[in-house]
Each structure stands twice: as C-alpha cells, then as structure tokens.
Amino acid sequence: AMTSYDVETYTNEEVIAVDQDALGRQGTILWENCPERTTDTLIALAEQNHYPEPPQCQQLWAKPLLGGDWAVALVNWATEPQEVQLRPANLQQMGFDGGADLRDLWAKKDLGI
Image (cartoon, rainbow, N blue to C red; front, side, top):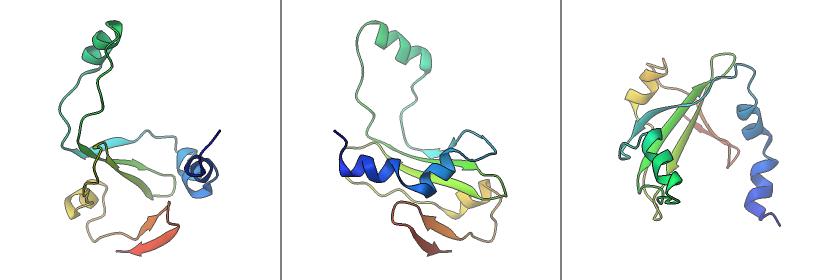
C-alpha cells in the first residue's frame, strides 16, 4: 500500500512536469559534501552483496528546463535533519546573477527571490 507521502508525490502535477520536461536534460550536482564514491566501487560492493548505507551528507542538484527555468533539488541523505542552502554562487552557476524567483513544489508556494 502507498503512504500518503507516496500518493502526494505521484500526483503532484508540478513535480511531474519537472520530471517530464520536454528539454529532457538530466540533473547534475552543483554542490555536495558527500564522500567520493565511484560507480566501479559501488558495483564491486554490490557483487559482494554489500550495499552500503547512504552517506550522511547533503547535495544540491539542478537541471535546466525548457523555456529557461531551472529545477533545483536540495537533498539531505543524513538520518537527522540538516540545513542545505541554495547560495548566490549556485544561482550564478545556473546563469542567474541577479537572483531568481523560487517556488517550493512540495508546499506549492512561491518563496520570492
């Protein structure tokens, strides 16, 4: 059975629109404090039936959308709440030198600049 969180996620039209954006670009990591782990290392571990826990770290992912907008995901892999920030340098990486209008797709509300 699906949880209410699952239902909300799978029926959130704004999140689905980002996932199915016509530009079709993958997201990339703009910032992280995670330890380096290569795909080869993870495959080797999996071949030994060893699946490490996700590292206790944070990441900032972003992807361009058709029309010039960007989608940003702030990810906390830690088991405890942690602060993850979208900083001016990250906005500059996406071409927004003067700031940007932000929207929280989960809360469905505009956050301003």
